[in-house]
Length: 539
Image (cartoon, rainbow, N blue to C red; front, top):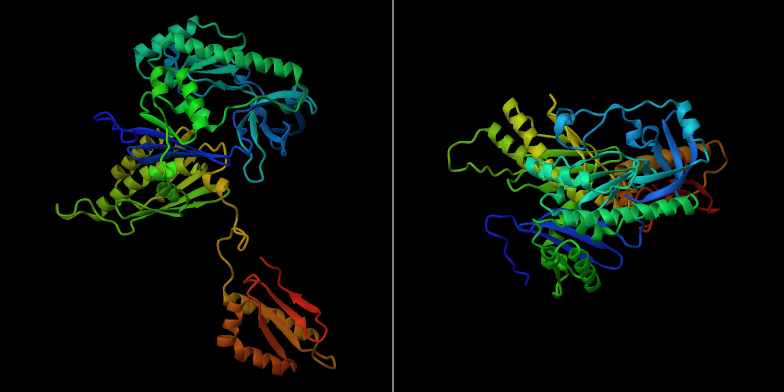
């Protein structure tokens, strides 16, 4: 059952689901290679996509934003330009990806009305209620980000309450199929005051299935309206389904060969959900009952490890190094131990080697961004290329690789400094941030002070303490407690200075090591009274 082969000439695409009590993991494999990886913890609240009835807490004109209480620990951040649904703020119509007379305008950004601070204050005074949807979860110290432009995704459609927009996904390129879907859209009984977009996955789907999806969304919209009228703010009006159901809704397409799940309860529920799509979709759901953990059986665990490594080795022998910070992601490309593909076919120029490594690097970077689920500003430091032709080719390769990304991306041409700059939509914490915490020893710095640095600081403070006793009748005996690595340094290299210090101040020094202490800790104690004269605060 688990040895199924893909159709000849077509990539084998599988979705593997590991559903456990504390964690759900979903891996998307293409010919056995990990291409997507998502993690969700059922015991923690997933809020992206949820719709809330909130209350305006305060307006910050300097930030051009409002803070909204939606019932969570932190108030939500709402930009002034996100407080009014898109259609109310637009002066230009947009076809949502449709053809016709507006086709030439599809790439033009719609102009929006500019609301003054006074307009916002009149329309949304503190204490007033507003219905918003979470677009970005709370990350680090920042609260969630929300918008008043709502969207409710179904299997084939996206309903947008408060919008008048109707159209077909721009990713459907076939002209006949677009026209078929546009005609079907015109005949749909869309709830008043709601826009509708036909999703990419609807391509080739019959009208009956799309109509069934619309009925489900209409019911959900009706329930949301009733909750808005009956519930008091702050409250949740609509919740997105859990990770497993979202995967089936958004990822179970015609090109998926199998969905393998290792949980019997989940297997039964997925069969029901997939059965509502089609018999074929239902037949792709399989239960895994092997002895090995499911992700280990499909060699996913080994591949996941690379998502946590700072350095990722390329097949050519080159490598890319990821550094994730609060503000941006820095990626460095190195040739490493490059193994040229042209060996044995004549001499390969250095420029060709660099081009080969950079090409492989940008493809892997695009994949790693998806796996790590990192976003924001990404700076890619490529190996310098002199050829403008090669630079343009690398740029096109990156653009093509990013088309597979579900998150919104924007990439710029390679700069004169050899840097490629891009942005990637960040809706939730990165994979690394959700799985690890800062090291309690170095507090996330990734390094600690050297024994030399600690010896220097200890001697500096010791001299200061001994100078305070200068002029008094007697210098007390001092006991200094340090980490064993620092004491080893003192004994081997700094003993002469400390002996000289004793002679100069006519005091007696005793050193003790304490392996339970932080390497950056030391204390100077009056040996007679046990009074702590100085204590280096642990980092």
